[in-house]
Length: 358
Image 1: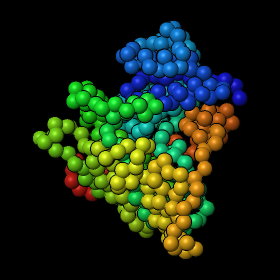
Image 2: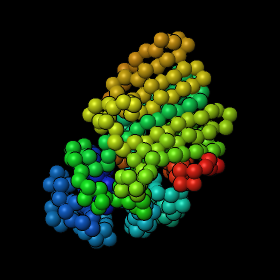
Image 3: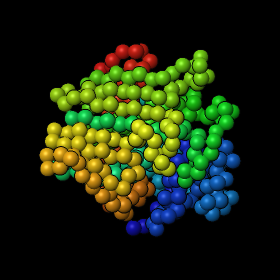
Image 4: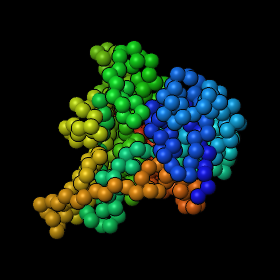
C-alpha cells in the first residue's frame, strides 16, 4: 500500500485529535498538514504528532495547495459540514467527515453533490461503528441469530461534550466555555439530539438492514427559562417501521458517568429485539448478551478486539481507497443519509410537537 498524505482541516470537534492519532499510527499514512482558523486549537496536535511550523496553517486553501493531500479529515461544527465540504472538494481530495452527516438533510445532499462533482469518495465517521460489541451484534444479526429485527432500542450520550477532549482527557467545563462552544448553539447544530441521535439512527439502520421508518415522533427537554440553554440535553425519538414495529432512540448529555470510563444507568448502547431472540450490546463491553430459542436464559458471547484494516475509520477508509472496495455500513453516504433523514424528522417533530412522516 502506498503512503497516503492526510491533512486535518477545522478543529471545531475535538475528535480531530483522535483521528489524527489514527493517521499517525497507520504504517501507510502521513500527516502532511493541519489547518484551523484558531491556531491555539492546533497546538496539542502539533505537539502530539511532531508537526513542524510549516505544516500548520490558519488558511485551509494554503494548507491544501501547499501539502497536496490525498485525503482530508474534516471536523467542523455540524451546521458547517456542507460549507466545508464545498470548500474542500474542489481540491480533488477524498474526505472523511466526522459525525454527524450534517445539520440537515438538505446540507447532506449538498455534500453528496459536491463530492460527485469531484469524483472522490466521502465517508461519514461514526465512532460507535468501531465499538467491538456493536460490530459483534451486527455479525450475529447478519448470521440470523435473532431472526428478523423488529425493534432497536438506543440510549447513549455522556456527561456533556465539553467534559472531555481528544484521547478522552477529562476536563470540567465552565459556564463561559459552554457559552462559547458551538455544541450549545442552535444555529451551529448543537444539542444532544443533533450530537447523538445520528449514532442511533445510522447504526439502527445498519441493524435494520437498511430499512427506513415511515413516521417519527420526538420530544426533547428544552427549557431555556430554567437552564439558560438554547439546545436540548435530553431527547427521545420513536420511529415506526412499516410491518415491523417501533424503535426508540434516546440521547442524553448529563449521564451520571461517561460510558467509556464507567457505564451509567441506564446503560449506554443498544438492545435489539428480533423475531427469534434479543441482543444486548452495551458500549465498550467485552461481551454481548444473546437470548434466543436455544438459550432463553441468555448467554454471554465474547467480543474480540477489532483487527486491521477494520479496527478504526482511518484504517478502513484508506483500505477502501487502496483496494477500490465500496464504503459500506454506517460510513456509507447511503446509510448515513437515511440516518440523517430520521434526525431531520425528529428535530421537526420536537419543534412542532407532532408526528412527522419521512
